Image 1 (spheres, rainbow, N blue to C red):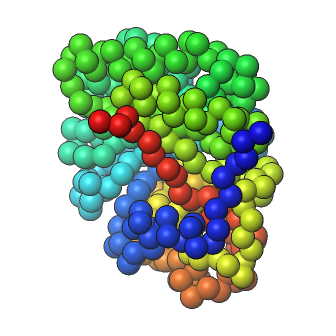
Image 2 (cartoon, rainbow, N blue to C red):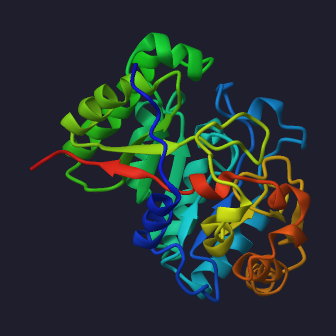
Length: 319
């Protein structure tokens, strides 16, 4: 049986350095996760969304535009994920729709607007719309190369339908002669799917689509992640905290991208600016990381091991 890749401390740190994740901290976040919608249509085994206790919702237009306006003013090149805890295509028929939200961001001049989706709800009309609004990249979580494994992991979805939806987007890009959005298909490496990793990479790269292989996260200790072998004696600053701001649908700024239930709230964009939260409350937490004072962190962060899973490997078709 193929084994999940377990990397050494040195390999993990080197991967972080190559990605530039341990560089000097910017004055404004390099990455902003915007929780446009916190509803999801699946109940995936590796995700704790199905157990989320905070109230699910849809971000108000006024809050969304405030966030986008500030990003445009401070760093138009920031990577802006227009989804955080849910699936964006839940909003494909909403008013305003996810396409209205994307268009607003692109019209403001943002250069790296991204979606993350399971792909199940993205029909051909939706695929065409994300091309038309100028989406820069879209990441699809698939995690399997067979219907059987997909059914166990991506509970509630259908493998063949999801693959068809992604390939439809690829076809439309070719028909419309556009390069964007860049398509990336993701595989979270686990014991239950690792035997399919090579087939997964081969299938998607054969279509010219980037395959992303990433380690499992524990969602701050909420599920088991046996790949996380390092302890606090080997700990280094978490790149998510160093580079990223995560904003829930109600405007609360949470500790990091794995803080699904908003267990640690560090600000409120309804009342504050992104920049003020970044340079004050989040700076205090970053300082604790940089000075290796991990025992002084909030318990969720202090006890978390997901910092060692903050990396990915990307595979593309050999040319």
